[in-house]
Image (tube, rainbow, N blue to C red; front, side, top):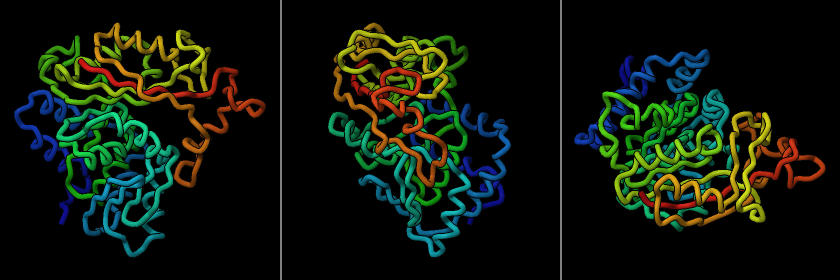
Length: 336
């Protein structure tokens, strides 16, 4: 039976379990300390509502069946209508799909499509994985099902961390974690005084999916990703690129791109490969280039805000409303 303290601070038990997954890692222990501080100091007007939603989740038998497009987490709850209303209080649900205690959550992104593009190229067996900008931890569940020993996601958007806590409520204890941190909060990076040295991270795989174009300094981000990997570890990078006929091009949007404000630069795929090489990676492979469709990213009952369809030109779906090329995403692998 959870204690009052567990209900008020539902992240405490998962953090303790995360510490125990790798007790000899000074880097991980420092990371957990920073995450606990971030949880305790986070101020958000919706936090009481989110915590109340977590407390209202029904008690069901834990279950994790994640080797499928919509991971099944938790045995089926009796009152599906109440469950759906409770989970809706954690809106917007962006990464999925998910099935929580029998409730099907049709998220904005068909993240399973991205998983299908990356899974044939990455061996997650026995790997410790760090997922930068993880959202609610969807990919972490898929990684565990693919054999990962540990999946640690970081995302500064607290509602996504609350969604992960809801998933964990149903899945039970498992080595998939999401912490309310940005990459700049991770220990061991250059300029992080008093933290363990950079080589103590020792992550086998570091993922950065949908993050690079949001970083003002792309080379700094790539360098940080490299620092977080063990020697020989693998980078999985997925980001916006220009159409294939502009492989060496570079787009620096004015104000917005696809209605997003914080898009700093979008390279062609060839220029992206050059950036990754310049950052010190080797064995670089471009494994996928796919135009994002309005079937893969769209508004749903679980993400009611505007989505990709509203960001494309009504006269030419090959362009954004700003007149730039419509979103295309590239996926590449590299080694430290």
